[in-house]
Length: 262
Image (cartoon, rainbow, N blue to C red; front, side):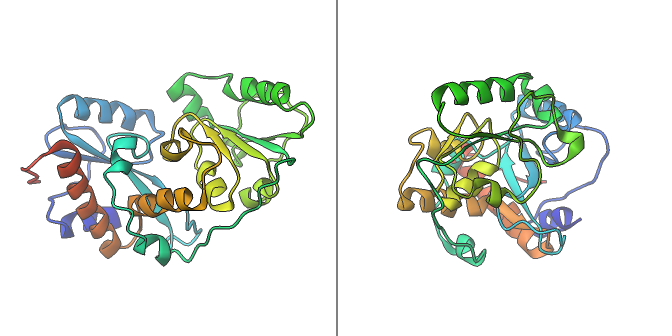
């Protein structure tokens, strides 16, 4: 409901519906992995309209819903390169998180391969990605420990044959002392960015930075994090209002749309 109330406070006229109707300028979905939402998003985009895609936040995570943050993207699973380019690197939202950069990188440390869930596999159609990534990492780094980190939830695990699996514990413990993180599009790349661990990824928000270098400087890391902090909001009416106003501004920047009536 905070997303609904935030949209209303931002001047939109939101309605909650269980089926895609396709009559509004905006479509809002919560949980980008649901195939029904992916289908609705495609239909809406094909009409030249905008879709707000909300999901779990990149950082500042909390089990308390009052403090939980949700990330948002415009028309895509994650903010695109163009969207991040268009985002001002104002540090105020990052500073409000109370997080800091640090460095646990060890050039001789272990390599972490991060897994996807079944929905991501079905959505992307790359069912052997983890197995192939693990075997390729072992060939590249024969003298390093190669660790597989599956999705923590047992119902999200996919079949992978590998001896060194770390499925329990907080992700920061898994990344501590690592030499590299390899992922398809995981939010773990953002955790690694905060911790100073190099990243190789193929998609996701972090790809904006790591497509240029696997080992960015502190300034480059902060540049990404300052921008990305504007793409997530607390589940509070007032903060969701800020999120919707930000989305309206980004829609104007990216698509030059002037008429944004609900």
